[in-house]
Image 1 (tube, rainbow, N blue to C red):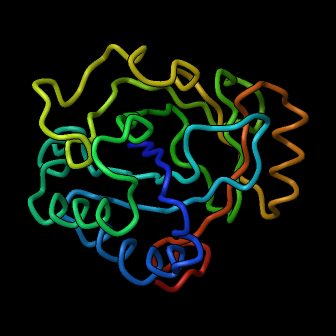
Image 2: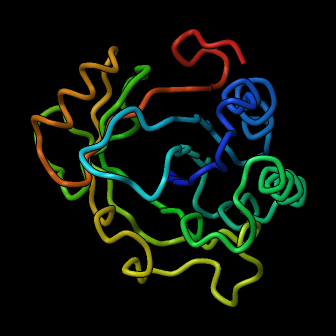
Length: 202
């Protein structure tokens, strides 16, 4: 899974960003060959300020398809347009990288809210994720000689290992973030998902 964190430009929420995700962005990504499932999330509450306001979970069918998916020409054009509509200009250091992650437990059951617990894994009911590599967001920053690297210290080291807990209520997720502690813990709410995920309709 690719854990894509990002910050949108000021005023994007008021300009209808959530609705655009549901009607345009989410259906487009979920139609790209090699993408198993793509969901959009917004940070609801955090224990301290974060470098991002939103994130996506992009599940790929197979790691061998990663390069084909990442450099899909239709996807590249779409993401460049995203930068024009909703981004904060180029380059944008806060949107520099995302995380190629793996879990041994499989994707958790769908819920409309979650809490991310950086540096915390291995507890009961916490889905443990580990970051294998950083992926360079070429569409936001320009070409790079190394579009993927196993040196994850270039990104946020707190996401080397992290836990995810899904909940039905945003208040439950917020309370979990506080109870587990950790300076970078945060809760989030689902904005958009493919048909059938929680009964969402795109």
